Image 1 (cartoon, rainbow, N blue to C red):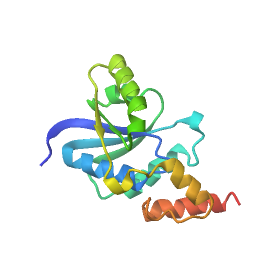
Image 2 (cartoon, rainbow, N blue to C red; image 1 turned 90 degrees about the vertical axis):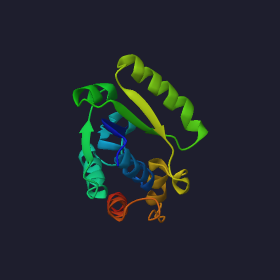
Image 3 (tube, rainbow, N blue to C red; image 1 turned 180 degrees about the vertical axis):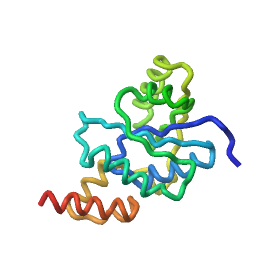
Amino acid sequence: MRAMTVGAMYPGTFDPITRGHEDLLRRCAELYDRVVVAIAASPRKAPLFSLDERVALAREVLKDVPQVIVSGYEGLTVDFARQRNLKVIIRGLRAVSDFEYEFQLATMNRHLNPDVETVFLTPTEHYTFVSSTLVREIAEYGGDVSPFVHPYVEERLKAKYAGRA
């Protein structure tokens, strides 16, 4: 049974979506009736995958979770939340080092839109060290990323780096 009928969003670049992201999203789906995976365009980060590719990856990974909706966006996260009547922003905290930045971000978001709350979740223990950045680096050098990403994401990473060789 879900604890809240409030819509929540989990924003990020998801370049690519990892098992850690997937874990948090599946757990959020148990708490909220609607969870929007809000994939930021993030052009300044120069993502490996285009926004459309990242949206497609997340949709494939989460296709069996009906209350999860995947959407790309540009602009401020709080504006995206306001436009979709989402009252909760989910953020993952892998380590203490994440907290300072995430706290600053949550405080700024509250300043920009006091109607939106930030909820912090920690990943399942065996995903605390997994990040999209590390997954991309392992994949770039031909390492095994299968423990860290869905098989479809692994396949797309291999194809992406094969095209760069």
